Length: 82
Ligand SMILES: [Zn+2]
Image (tube, rainbow, N blue to C red; front, top):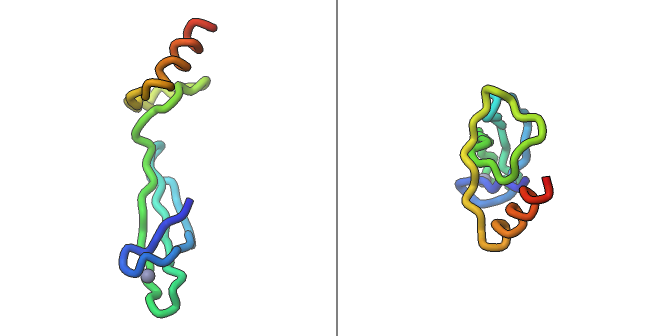
């Protein structure tokens, strides 16, 4: 995953990260531009389901992403196959 520095738009690298909740992870990044040197934090959060899990966790409820026209056909074919 590529994260750009919000100030100078240079690539940044992850220095450390920790799981905050089952759905969210916080990462500390440093800008690779030596003239900038900005360090900052980002959150990575699960917020939509694209395809259903085979081993769902009872505490996790994520809304389903709306299907595009092509995905709708594939999803209905998968449902019919099971
Ligand atoms: Zn920067």
